[in-house]
Length: 250
Image 1 (cartoon, rainbow, N blue to C red):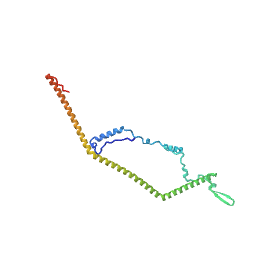
Image 2: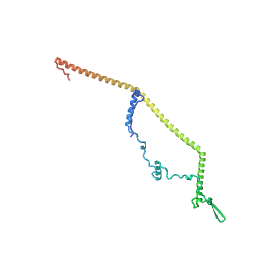
Image 3: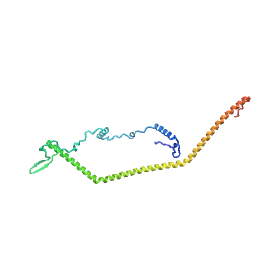
Image 4: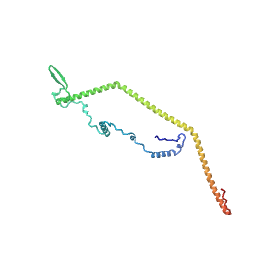
């Protein structure tokens, strides 16, 4: 259930805040009231805990590692991005192909690095596989650069257009809210100024009635005092003259 607030402030009518010392007193009252107010809740407590990757244990472990700031284990193998020749070679195994003679025909095949070959040739084949992989990687980079050069400008123009459109929507929403606030303040000012004269007249009448009440109370107190003095004087005369006091009839 939402709380209902009844505000009786009339900022366009009440001018007491401009009187000397009133603003300081109001600020102290506000500070005292805010001390009694409950502290704001922690923003993190406003949202329920979300269990990320509850169905993937591997991702949960990775998220926990990132949360604790631990390095990745095992680390990325950067050696595959280096293009270096084998450290030891043999002249007899420097060739990277094998010729197989079958009758009158010959076929040249390139053995894979996974095949059982002498150590030197195996190292050369590994280096050759790495070179081919990096060559293909460079070809992919060139292809990506060509695609960016051909289509990247238009893509960025479309993206910028979308961002500008979103920005215009946000600015329009802000301007609409600002206009609503301005109109609301205008209505408040108009309504308060329309009733300001009536309020001032009622306030003057209230002050006059309070003054009249105080005058009546002072006059009553004065009459009561005078009555008590007359009673005391009557009692004194009755005692001196020996005449009994005449009690007033009920």
